[in-house]
Image (cartoon, protein in one colour):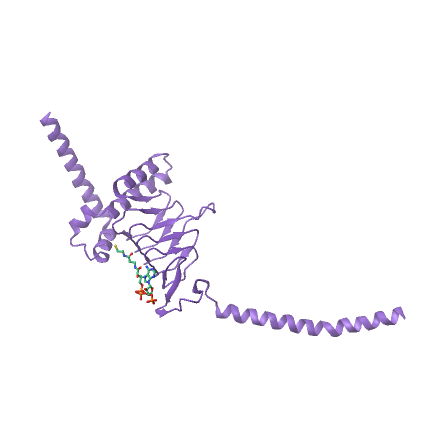
Length: 245
Ligand SMILES: CC(C)(COP(=O)(O)OP(=O)(O)OC[C@H]1O[C@@H](n2cnc3c(N)ncnc32)[C@H](O)[C@@H]1OP(=O)(O)O)[C@@H](O)C(=O)NCCC(=O)NCCS
């Protein structure tokens, strides 16, 4: 009995050591991301062994590859196993870029058609989900270098621009331009391209000045066309008058 236990223990130890070598070799960017983005991340070994976000990404890569083959059941099974162990549910269909760091992890959900860019940071409780009304591509596309705060919900087939910050507990249902900071429910842009933005204005629907000019020109052309057509009509009208007479 003791021999059996020792045997199992040594097999487990070898498996863990091999897995750690594999992760250290092929997931250097993710480990580096954890070390730079988490002030509490002290050493390579600590990140390699104690960070649930890292392991959920490792298993996601495997599940994603199996799904592409396609192998039924196993990808979802792996995804659900990782959810059980880490509290992070990444659907095997989600496309995840390089250097993703999921800090703390618990409660993170990444939907089937979500796309996550490079160098993204997600905190616990983040949902990249659907609104429940859409079909097909129904989850968000997150740009590069985006930070999504704890508990934030990003819903629907929307794009979050590169280098944006989504504040903790924000609910974002509209596209966000690059270099923006968004807070609140519903998410409102408070900063864009380094400039503070007035809270009271609806900056989620930012007005494009070029579009405004084009629209103004269109209105002027319409007005001018009406003026030009008027004499034609009145000329025709005069002709009819003559026939009636
Ligand atoms: C949004 C965030 C990125 C800060 O961005 P910032 O540009 O530095 O914003 P500021 O701190 O200057 O705040 C700007 C305004 O937004 C408000 N604000 C900031 N974060 C907010 C949030 N999550 N929800 C609602 N309002 C928020 C501030 O009170 C401030 O309001 P005011 O102008 O009326 O005073 C940050 O507050 C945040 O939420 N980070 C997520 C971090 C996280 O999840 N950590 C978990 C660690 S475990």
